[in-house]
Image (cartoon, rainbow over all chains, first blue to last red; front, top):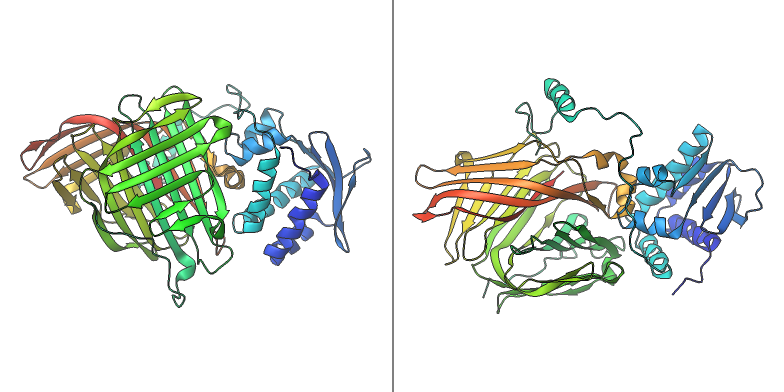
Length: 178
Length: 333
């Protein structure tokens, strides 16, 4: 059954639960975001968000200028949550889009990392994830498309030879990789 | 009947309660279809701490179909606990010692995935108490071979498991994920009534410092033989192309660099004490990475499960241990 909660409600709830679970992480999140405003797009829902003196503020996006944009859909979010899709593959397949200056994009990913790290230790954030999952009609998971050559692969044998020569292989100089 | 066992939650006064772990684990090997099932339910952290968690992992590998299933993380209070049972929403595992049976269930409806089995011990249980694991310790209660009744449904396809083999263990102890610890562990089972081989070796996180390894060989009539020390050699060779799944996805996203891990493609062990001799060669087919987060402090453990086939040869106690079967090799760091 589709959830009643809208994207802005999820974002508000996420940040509120983060602050309650780990105030230090919340302070770091505010520091990372600073005075920037970002746009979050999930399917047809689009929200502009930033931090004000009272905490997170959100408003429906009107398409005005923002410092960074992150866009995806619910299906991709579930495929990421269930480990069917890596973040890199989601970006390369066009299922996750992040736009902004280099610094703003780096800050967006840092903010996401902070949230993920705390979610590992916060039952209330895990419960919110379960609620999100329950609210999305689940189709079959979509894995990453294969065969993308976006950089030249280093031949594995040469890579191993180099690591072995530098004694950097786990397991030591016998060349074994447990 | 197998020896009584139970979950080991810490006493309220235990100063190491924040490092508490309890872990029930069943592997199912279907020699007919090649299915390998990993069913794991675990408790992490001081039960009195609201951050304590229960994790349920149900992953099935079927040749030609790949991996199905997922891992789920719940507050410990949201899991259903018994004397020796843990159930989350998608995974449940319960041990009944009087009948020597382990009941396991996995339900992931969105993938048309289900597993429902009752595994019955064919050999006795083995216990190793309070062994060092990094700065902490662990205990291991294992049943190397169980028979199986039940079935799996993968992608809507029904796979009977009445001729499958299973391995069960219960681990408990005190450690924090992210500590300087790791291990190698493997279970390799021929079809019944052939031998089962269980190997274990504690290591540091980099796998450069390796503790004393053990090989347990059990036979259908219940006899067992343990090799350990210098007479046992383990070797890892080559590497698989990569990991086919990483779960839970949120933790995988947090550790993108870990997606590059390439587990060993082959594993060889030789055990020889001058009287008995075992040689085993395992060829990995596919691997997943299960990421464990510590509830009490920032720290993560990475458990790589490689499934594949193996062949063995040798003689133990005058019994020929030549055979072939399915196995799981685990590399944790």
